[in-house]
Each structure stands twice: as C-alpha cells, then as structure tokens.
Length: 422
Image (cartoon, rainbow, N blue to C red):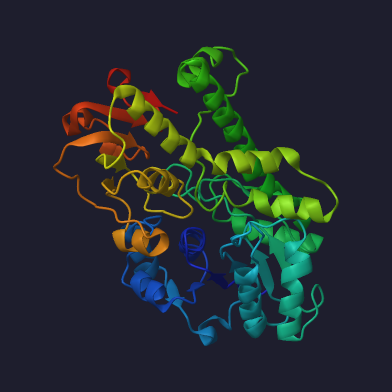
C-alpha cells in the first residue's frame, strides 16, 4: 500500500486536534470551507483553545501541517477523515447537510484505492446509506471496489486537557476486514491507549450515539431528583453525597445540559428509532427534561427572591458564565441563555460575565450581551452558572447588595453564602 497521506475535512473542535496529531506521523492537510478559520490557524493560533499555540506552531513549522480551503491541495491525499458538525434543525430533526457537503468534497478529490473515514456523530446507517452514495455519485466510482470507508467516532471533550485526542481509546471500523485493519492501524499508530476495532461500521456508529444518550439520560434522572427534593426542602447534593457512600452507586450531579454532544446527539438515535417503529420514551423524556432546566433555574431564582423580599421587577442580576461548560470558550447550545431569557421577562438589568466567551459571537448567536471583565457593582442576585476556574474563590458576598441572593447552579460555592442551588 502506498504511503498514507491524510486529509482532515472540518477543522473545528474535533478535526483540528486530530489533524495536528496525525501530522506528527503522516503528511497531513487540514481542509475547511471557512477561509477566516484557515487563515487564523496558519498564524499558529486556535481560537477554540483545543490545540495550544505551541503544538499548532510545531505542527506547521516542524511537521509540514497545512490548512487550506483549496480542493487542489487535498487531491493527492489518500486517507480522508470527515469531522464536520452534525446538528439538528429547529424541530430537533437531524440535519445532515454538513455531512452531505463534506461527502461531495471527498467525491471531487478521491482516487482509486483511497479510504474515507467518518468521525461525525450519527445514527447507525448514515455512513453507508447517506454519505457513501454521495461520494459514489460525485466521484463516479464504486464503493468497496474503487474506494473504501471506515468510521471512527470522535471522543473530544471540549476544554478537557486530560482526555486529549492522543490519550483516548478510539473505536475504529472499516467497510471490509482488510480496510478495518488498515484504519485501525492508522489510528493506533498515533494513540497512547490504542483502539477498539468494532465488528462493523454500524456497530461503531451505534457505540458513539449511545455514549452521549446514556449521559443525557443519567443527568436527566439527577435533574428530576433535584426538582423533587427542592419541593421537599431537601438538598440534592447532600442526598447524592450520602448515597455515594454505597460502593456501587454512580455519583452524578444535576445540571444544565448544553453543547454539541449530549444535548444534540440523542435526537439522531430518537429519529432513527422512530423510523424503525420504536418509540424511545426514556430518551425523549430525558431530552425534554434537560432542555427545561435553564427555565427551571430561572423560576427557582424568582421564587427565592420573592421569599427573601427582593423585588423581582428591575432587579440587578449578575450571571457568572455563559459557555456550555467550564474553562473553554464553547458557547454551542448553552442553556445559560435560557436562564437569561427567563429572568429578562422581569428585569432588563442583567449582566452576564464570562472571561472565556467571545462577546461578539455570543451576541451574534443569542442576541445576548456579555462582558469579559468582572463588573464593579452591587447586585440583588448573583447566579453562578458555569464553574470557570476564575469564579472559584471569588468574593461573591462583596458583589451583593444588602439582603442579596446567591444561587449556585454548579454546587461548588461555600454553603454558608448560598441561598439556593440546583
């Protein structure tokens, strides 16, 4: 087999770290439709902060890593990896357009004997039933005769500097036994903890979709417990700590479920299950419950304000954090905006402070203003919504007006300063 030359299509949270890693072992080109993104990466900086400037510059300067929007520069590759988003539409129906577009791109450049591997999270069957027919149509070649395929689901956790792409164990698969071995060997060559070779592409696709669906269901259970115990006047976190003293209790916490994985991917399996005549009640109820939690937090805050005698109308409120998780700039599908929207019905005096988020991006995506520096003001309410490291140890009491209120969504603040928590 000829020397492996890799092209990673889609240079976001998933594609860029993978491309950078592959470049340490193979000639690698990163392809993206966004010229602005490509230009920024070639200066040696990743705005998502998933790849450090040091590692990115090393890949460019010492390993020949190149990012491009030019199809001609990826035509001589022979191992194409598709790592584009798989969103849902406004009705929570899978939107395969990015995948179809990426498949068309592959079809324009793929050659005889080449391999295309999909990393995007999908329901079982998308690779072989939706994507590869597009590659066939555009290229004029026959799948599993002229070109081959694999699937290796991404396991990127944005902001996580411990479970980085080179350290995670990757699931791999291929369209023939020989290609499965080849795909597995390519990934294995750059991973510290190796791979798990699945028996088929559909099995690999299914394994990824249940990873996130399982987490969604588990968190929904904790959120349901929080709603029950809050009504009963019992602290949910105290209950969890007590239950966790049993050796086989799985310790999880209630919280907001946002981002591009847990809050989106289950819809792909839900849709496919329904298409096959199965009504996935647990997953559907989990999605519904988790999507309501931002609104619920807002309602809890209003209730506590009333109980404490704080006038809700025109109250000054500070929300700490807007990203979907701590210590990363990712604002995709953040549920903090639901807290903001709910409280905005009562007061226009809401300040959102997040040192990680891009204010311009937040305004464009959610029409919500934020600040990147801590405001020097006094507030009626402070809500800790995201557990950024900058918020740990903040003197929150000094930010409050007399008789002010603190609500802790994450359950990390000292108990003696908190009036309510999820």
